[in-house]
Length: 311
Image (cartoon, rainbow, N blue to C red; front, side):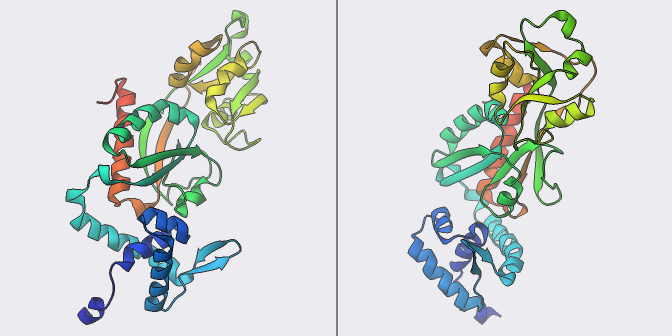
């Protein structure tokens, strides 16, 4: 066994890991900061070493062979263990390069994004943080390594919690938002729930694609959406001057209330809280760079909940 291991070029293993993650030679080369031709040559040597094609064409994209799919988890675990053994004590976020792609809603970006951006600018200036809109395809993209994390309300959408690792970030209350001139006589919960709604929908026409939509259904709202948008920050402007009502997170509502002529109405009964969770691929749990990024998210979210600015 020892002589066999000595005959293997162990430098191929990180290349193989990125190829399994990205399913794409170009993206793997970018992640490794290597030339595409070098990664292609390494893939050829890996195929010869393992007697397997590893990546095969499926339409316009490459997919893992059955052998490569079986190999993926054990390779991630093995390399993560080696990195924890040799690299963790000297890990320096300033050396991070490339993109960190997070699928979420603009509410989360506005809530913790600014302070997170400041942290990354200070500690990891070579890392690009990219927020993309969350959708029904996000779990698959996370599974395939096309994005690095999802931030979303617990229990909403197609995220199977047993498939990914996850961590609680922060919670928030829900309030009604109405036009500032709405009569007091029309502010009862019954009246609000029978109103037309301005609503956030991550997926077109899917009223249950947001936590707020799920809560409205639980409250027995005679739901009719006058308008649906994929951005929470637009809701005050779609309520102002209309009979529309929005059910929105309190922290966001307070921040946006001054931007339009609207008022907030607290529910008369306790509503479920929005519990925002972070989800990531189990294979990335011990990755030093990913772990550091998760720590920054957690610290930023904790400071937000405490009502103070992170240091």
